Length: 456
Image (cartoon, rainbow, N blue to C red; front, top):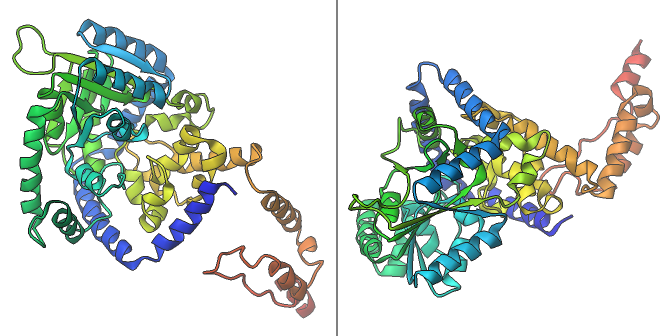
């Protein structure tokens, strides 16, 4: 058993039986469920919209190299410098060099899971530059010394009382402050930082190939200020974020909003096509786009799991997953949690160490049902399990047990070779097989088929 698997089993058990945590998640998830249900009902034919979005993303990943080259060519024509990063280290070194070249002291950052993937904040602060999250949820977890709990709502695990206590501790705000008061407090604090920042860092919801531009969608306006005020704008995006044309946003943006937050479309939607031009008054003087691989090409080469690169990071599969809803985001010990995280994390962080995440699944298929780009997520989790066995990553005792199970259950006569008493003794050889919350059933002395035969 890998160290990561041991931690997952221990942490998931602790969280699953934490009643306070479950109550908080249940409350926050219920708000999400109601909003998304309303958002989906705005579509006259949601399934057709999903089919079209799936087609667009399939076309992209089947021609990924061509679209990336097109994006690079058009971005450079717009005055943007494109940097290719094979892994997290190359991306970090590129950012640190930009900070050094521009003698930066303060960096503001909008919400971006790609920057979380490479631990950007820690590496920026390591070279003496302050890195500040500007999304309210991200800011909350940053001052709490935590990582995002969820890919869309980073502070989902905290109640409004938890947040009020945190701000009282860190900033001496009034006890039991309301969410409205705390939002206004953070707004005032961040406005000052925006005007002083040397560098602004964002992710990209989409990379628009035909325009060489990035598309950002948000609800707070912080991303817009992140790339507007500082003189330097750095974009860090995974290579899979490409869409062929700006016209695709008319489909993709509303689908992302409906499945992510239940909105018809998010409040702020920006298309950034390069640094400030000579005739323009606003915007950065320089713009860099760092295209991050970080083992995505390894995933791309898989015959079955490569479709996971179609993901648009809406978070719908997390919210639908019964496992995530019980064990929460932190138990996964990964940037991306829930079903999509369980598929891609083994490829990003090491298959032998993280393939256990693919077994954290009831195979109910709800994740596949809600996916806006029709990724067959539950099938891919099964493919990961298959590959773990092929790679020899499953324990020897498990493999022997499964072989014995297969042999015994292939024929009824084999099962009836031993009586119920012997079966019970064999089952008790490993008392932890079902964990300490469940127990194996007790076998009758005679099987049903034997009892039927004797009665006849």
